[in-house]
Image 1 (spheres, rainbow, N blue to C red):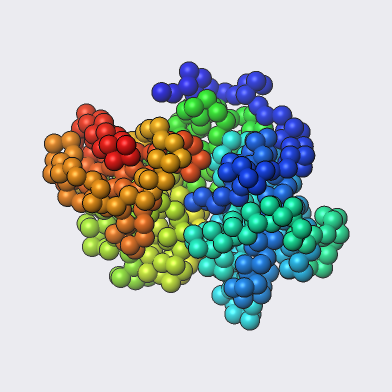
Image 2 (cartoon, rainbow, N blue to C red):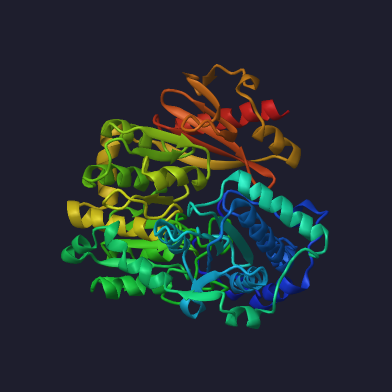
Length: 546
């Protein structure tokens, strides 16, 4: 149930005490014996609040040292590209990371003027450096908790492939970081920040200029300018603020407005998310309420989360698009408007994304690669071109350049936003209008996610389920067609369960941060049938968990 103030502007009582959050980063020492205060890499790195002892200086020092040791073992001898977003804890964590990297004699590329840097700009910089075959390969760190609330911090490692690290790498890094925490950080090498920042090993890198000037390689910026698309780009106070201003100027997009071009670590300009918290979730109608209210002022309005790896698309005719709907539209458009893409290049989707994508891919005659939740599963395919588009239901996606080469192997919210403008410029229809056409052709679905209670032990059992533990043969009146605990696209464990029928499916996965499991479900037979699917899904999973 939505919070009574969801979608309304934040008040002073909703705001964090920024100074207290920053003090806690340095003052609180995490207890390595407490599972909630250990380093844990989820699908998007380690996240937590300094106030809870879950994201503090000790965590960052330990994680950075563990990354240094990992890259030595892996033979990564080039620089570390590092970026950070606008959360209150991001700059302190960046400073801590720099101390350890320089203390270990690692070369670091950081943004000119210590500016905020979006995740896709870091990914692109890694790929660009490594493509030049300089004899040493680079990797990267992004300091961001993505769309999480203002009191949270986050830390991600991107190996030389440019995208999120796989589980083997992050598990080893987390294990070593927790050893260092337990040992009182005695194995951490660091130098004072002022000395580190002045070191010849720290090199200013033009992330912004390199990224913006290359955008024409992946999106038809000329078409957007020629059509004079009225764009409202809202960075939601995140790292893309300066990028949108530069995009407007460099490509002479006179009809673009950078909405709310300011940063505030308390994010006091936000409207409250569905649960009443401040959260920079550009896929949430409540977090995007201000932009939705102003949609008549633009042809296309867009949003990004704090590190700009997610996108939100708002149109005057439909408001905020469901991320699944936009993914389907983007796939349909790209695979019919990128003539240089290989005929063999596949569509990548996470298994909790809409089956509309399956139907669109089949209509295009394209192979569908369905993977577990996590953008890391698209990295290799985007890198070698076997996957031309990879997307997930939480509004994260990336795709190849017009020439069919890698652009970013991490999620890129900016190119997804600009693609919506290209679609309008080239076709004369908004993405939401094109979605209506796809729905008429392939069917309209009802899709939702709900949470159900589960303790730590139950979540572990769910993550380790096997298909033969499920004895049901029907779901909401339809025969069960498949029971999956591994993704069909790559055979990787789902970390949960997916059950499909001809017209519906559900997937259940444990939450990495809360005592709940998540049920994703979809039906092409309407909202009432979806409710049946959800109810039976919860009963089925609860019966297995005991």
